[in-house]
Amino acid sequence: MDKQHVPSPFQRSGAHGRIYEFSKRIDTQNDDDNTISSSHFPKTPLTTTSSYEGMWENTMKHGYGTQSLQNGTKYIGEWRYNKKEGRGSLYKRVRNEKTLQLKYEGDWVEDMKEGQGSYFYSNGDHYKGEWKLDKRCGHGRLETVGGDVIEGSFVDGTLSGEARAVFSNKNIFVGRYENGKRSGYGRLYYHDTARVSSSSSSSSSE
Image (tube, rainbow, N blue to C red; front, side, top):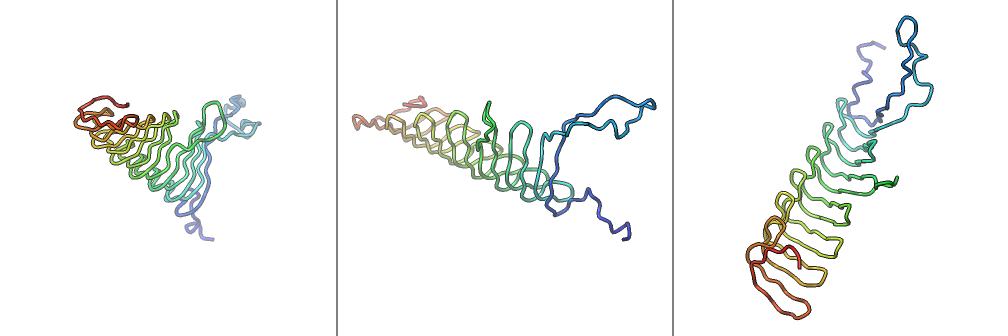
């Protein structure tokens, strides 16, 4: 075969493949001539620290693939030229355990959460809604581990704008928030007395 038609092993374009990154385990003892020979390669198996398996384009992760990192982070989804872009799921290792926990599932743009997605916080809270530049931004719904359910507008990660909050004691607030706190006009409905209070309270919960 003509050498100029032999594809380079580094041109993984449009193909499915797997690559590993290895931790160093190299015997540093040198020969008399101070060169590295085959005897200096590790006598024990190399251990993988990170890996990627999926589609490639011009040596870059491009298409659908799975990346696993040494710290326990795992991403399964779409890539665009080495960056997470499209739909994908991010998993992280549970502290002091070997199991993985879903952290985010949704849209990505240039390695950042952007579009529609769900995020599962370590304290048990769950947010589902819009994202921009890795932050909650737009309409979303936050369910807290304490039983509160808040649906409304988020800006730069915090509740800001019109919202409706149903608290664990079944009281309901409908009104405006600013930086995560009630601010401006709103109505608070008390479940136990059916009383309605209109105020400009700045408290975040009831």
